[in-house]
Length: 364
Image (cartoon, rainbow, N blue to C red; front, side, top):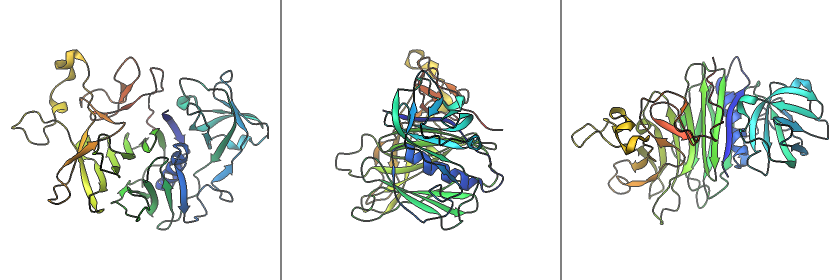
């Protein structure tokens, strides 16, 4: 089942926006069922003894008769936790997510943000482990890092706080078997971004994390495995970085080639016609109502490896989860009445959690 995080309101910070982003993405990977293999022991990773760690009760429960309320019999909650984030590591994926705590009821009950709550309500579940964390204390520049294992396959993700407000993310498509081979990292400049609204869609080893800040309404990071790769392609794993100001075909994407070396990968898009420039994207020129009996065109993008004679210059597979559509649709609006797809920006569409799923919020 798909794991959803919607409109996670990360607590505002006044400095080190990149540190807050990195800490939150680490917690989101945990929600996505990734497991941490190691970290550098930075005192501000939100683990026991850290000022960013609040509490981790193991007896949480949820009930559909009390939407948005999380209960514990061990009285772990305090009013000071309002504004912190809580991850619910539930067995039932419908309950498994992460929210900002918006209400303190009593020591046994808290309430989570309505803007991020599942449109399907809770499924009755007890004995859930939770993590209440904050992001107020910044990680150590140049040393803070953590290595995570995907829930399926060999892929690993490495998180690194490279410079002030500049988190960098890496993929190890082969993991550490038989060798720790890492691809080029992708960096996000967060120097002026103190507000974040985070979203995640996770399925098996595919984790799409995207967010909005007060100065840029769409950035995303994805670890995943290509669809429709050749059967002999044992590690079709990648990292992908995107921005709202660019077409999908211009995003940064990296994998390993057949010789276990880093190679640049290019998401593809249909051209306007045979004589058009390669940048003449079909979706930028033709409105979807002119084709497909009036239905919106959605395309799962194929990717092509960089033009390297021995190991590249080939189509390797398709990007999971994401789809491409007409570029001029309204930003951050649903594409269909069934609630299956949401258009973000510049023709990039992401899955939606049903027709009542909350629309994304851009912080101001």
